[in-house]
Amino acid sequence: MLNGKVISDTPKLEAIYVINKTAATSTATQRGGYFTIAAQPQDTLVLSSSVFNPKTVVLTEKDFTEDLYFVSMEPMDILLEELVIVDYSYINSEALGLVPAGQKRYTPAERRVATAASWKMNPLGLDPLFNAISGRTTMLKNAAENDKKVTLMDNVSLLYSTEDITAQLKVPAEYVRGFLFYAVENKYFVKLMEANDIEKAKFTLAALAEKYNKLLAEE
Image 1 (cartoon, helix red, strand yellow):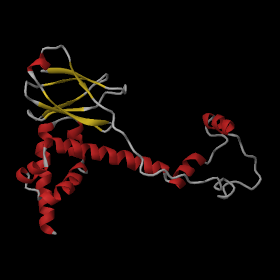
Image 2 (cartoon, one colour):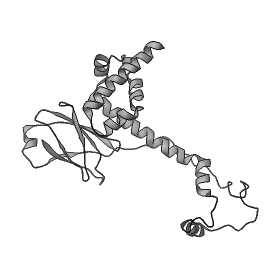
Image 3 (tube, helix red, strand yellow):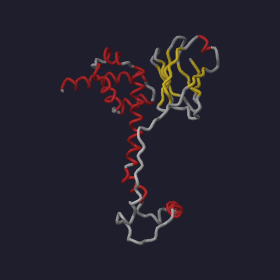
Image 4 (cartoon, one colour):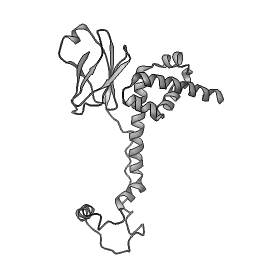
């Protein structure tokens, strides 16, 4: 067994996937970046997370002589493709016809007090309404869900290369990416991956590949 710890500039180090690609086993880091995984010299470990750049290491005899094996990881740079600033100042309760024109308007501090006091001064829940108008809530939910799916796809790719999926699961090379999208939509498969149950995940992936290939044949 290998006892290890991820180190980085960021304090949040839990839930990082640690995959032994050689032995086809995996685990996830606990609070503080600590992990334990079955491994031996010459095994290849792959560490992956949605907030860190992937890291691949090949273990040596020396790595097993210390109490802890340290792995440094670099936080992922997240670049925004576009920043759009939209002026919603013209949208207010009067313009929307929610309150009579000229009704007293409350300061932000007053509204916060009202919110804490069971919405007595904000019975219509205007903040959620404005979120719905701007689409911000939906956008954030979709972004989080897509990020989760991309991370899962990356983790599947660590277990199976494109060549493996084509040779072992019989998925045509040009449809491999589509198959990965198809797989991460399956809730049972996602639960197995999140639980690091690699063996069951592989069986499920094989079954999904069979269904996917049938769908391709029907087109």
